[in-house]
Image (cartoon, helix red, strand yellow):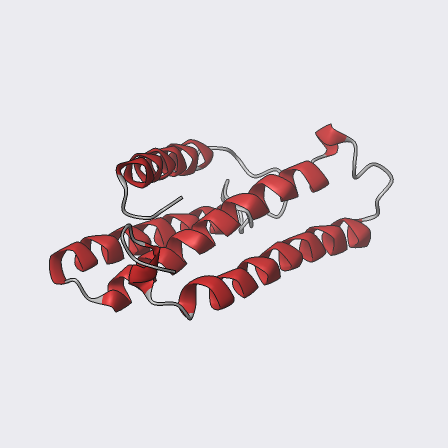
Length: 150
């Protein structure tokens, strides 16, 4: 999809609104494992904060770019939202791979569970980083816009 088009803007607005709804709706979910101290929050709530920050930084960069036209702000927007999407994929695949409801972790010991979780997320993060570094970060950020050649 070409960036900056009305379709991209609508899809982006839907993505941002959906992510904020997901983030807000997951905050009250009580942690069942890996609690942080005696709070109701757990290890996985940290990722909510990271996702929220990524969305806010990407959105702020877009607003700065619209105001100033600086390519580095557009690149920051592109990279932050690419990592936001990677984080969404990591959460989704982690939920499928490690949630006992799906039956994939039955019979796994604790170590095997965490190795599976870590390996899955490391693989997704590595692929995302490779794509971001080779496809987004090295190119002219304006090359993704309509009317520009890639």
